[in-house]
Length: 110
Figure 1 (cartoon, rainbow, N blue to C red):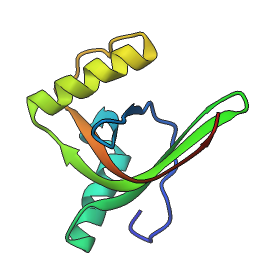
Figure 2: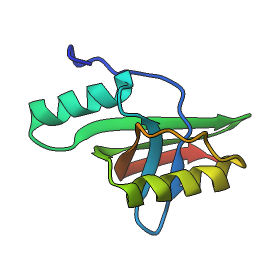
Figure 3: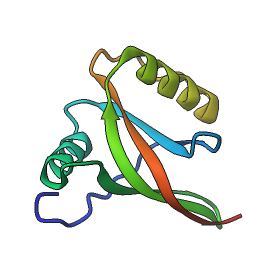
């Protein structure tokens, strides 16, 4: 957010351990994407972000630096990973982008 406070919303996230990346698909006009783009401009580089997932008593938090990917190949890969992770393919969306997070830290409880 412009005032520096975190923007916390539920998201579907996928994790690519080989690449050290987490990905979130979103609409290019969403508030989370606008916040990341604003932070990138203010910091002259990737924005700091975190995502968290819970399943019962298990949880994982991933922290890192995010960039927005708009190219067709990145979006297609993120959608495929989402479909594999969540068991459903998202509806087509010509305004879809990828919030790609290069991980700095991972924490959790298995």
